Structures are given as C-alpha cells and as structure tokens.
Length: 144
Image (cartoon, rainbow, N blue to C red; front, side, top):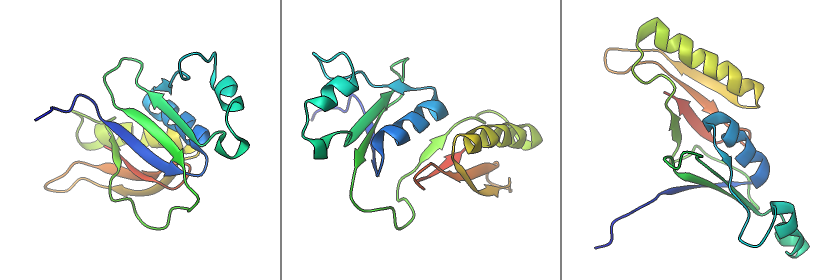
C-alpha cells in the first residue's frame, strides 16, 4: 500500500486568486510559482482561452511544512456550512485570558483583511476558547 506523502486542501470559490491571497496573509504562505516555462501567472493565463483564465490559484507554505492550498472557480456559490474546515492554530499552548487575547488580536487582524467574526466560543470544562470565522467568500474556519 502506498503511503501519503503530501496533502493539498482544495477550496471551491468564485475568485480563486483573491481567496488565495487572503489565505497567504492568514497563514504567512506565498503564491505558488507559475507552471514551468512561464515567468508569471499573467503570462500563463494569457495562453488560456478567455473562459479558463484565472480559474485556479494556489498558495504554499514557504517552509515546505504546511499543505498546499488550491483554489478552483466553481459556478455555484456557497450554500451551507462547510463539512471540513481549517483550524488556524494561533493559541497553541496558551490558556485562559492570555489565549483569548491572542485569538482576539488575530481575529482583529483577519477582519481587517475581509474575514468575518461568526462567534467566540469561550472555554468550558473540556475545551479552551476558540473563535469561529469566515473567509472572504464565507468559508468557515476556526482560530484555535
């Protein structure tokens, strides 16, 4: 049986490059390099039929540790809650008020980029605090 070497997370969206750039800012990722033989994405897109230009984009972890994120244009809009979401781990190892303050500071930064605060889930007897958010196209993710 083959073992998995890498994981890519794929987002359906209306504006792939815009959503990719948002997630680059969230995660400290960079835009993926263009296909071999092209100096940039504009040059590559110019070779495609007009209806295919900008239909996909991707971003990568510059350290090579995190998964590649791929964004593909789809005709339909988001209708219901995600079945899979990203946990952006900004509060790892923190507890109580310190954790919540760290999460809130990151929430404020992401709201300035176009994200939406959905709700704050305060700590209880089992879980530490987290913040539920939506990206610029309404995809849910958690600040954890």
